[in-house]
Length: 74
Length: 74
Length: 150
Length: 150
Image: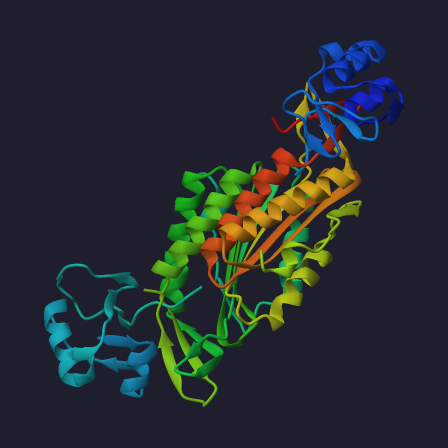
């Protein structure tokens, strides 16, 4: 599925989107750290379809995933 | 001494200032009600030299007195 | 009370309504003050209240101008003593202000939003309470009523 | 949720700094709404903070725009449900905003000052907390740091 990268994560990854395959958010997080080891030391949230995920959930592959570093608006 | 009238008091008195002689604020209030009987039924404050008077005080005749109906700024 | 701004003699009164362009100019003047992180503004607008079936068309404001400016200077000093604000600007209309027009402008700036917000709330409330300003509400049948903040 | 305004799809993002003239136009548009008695406004201005002896020259804002607008719609509904406000307008900059320029504009209007004041405080705080907006602080030596609201 499509993963959108923002802020310091996009900067460190050198891109703004990537594709990851995972059947749930737990697997997704593991795959993301494999693809981007620097994530292990960063503070970030995962959004699924534009909502923050608080608990693990299944993914069917059509979701829009986003990795969000700390917010800085205002 | 000079007495400044504002708002509804100026309107009812038909003028914006008058002269009253009084040796303290208690006498002043009595003279004002004599001069403007409608004051008896109005809610107003007395300022001496641009400060609200909370208690009776002597007057030497050089003070600037003002009669202030309820405030409506803002 | 080291801040010279709190002592400068100011006249808060402007003749007639406060134009939106005046507010824009006031905001734009702060662009050089790069220690500012937030501005908070309150604007009072004359409301077309219905009173006994008659609409308020305008308010004619008069003031005991010298006392109002002295009271404002005291409120300013209190605000600067209580909050780390960079600037505070207050303007109030005199004369006839029509419904929909602006009659009151309170503007505080600070490094952070909380002091600016609290200072504007304080100053807005205290101006309404302490400044000898009087308002004649002019109704649609050309009668009038005296407004009070109490 | 009878208020159609709370449901209209809106995009809060503007390219570049928010000009003071835009704020004036926004205020002036409310002159026909004579049920309004007070407007409260918060403006965020980019602050030239000193970080390790280097000054912040600008902040480059980026956002997860769709999610930010969805979150904003939720905050709007919460504000309209909690306070009797007439209007609520929110704008945020994208792109490079220099120190001294305005990047954030929150504007609420109501019959009385208290709801407008509280709604602006709430919306300002919640936007900072809930909207996925990211800020790259560009320093005087052209290095940068990532700003966080935490």
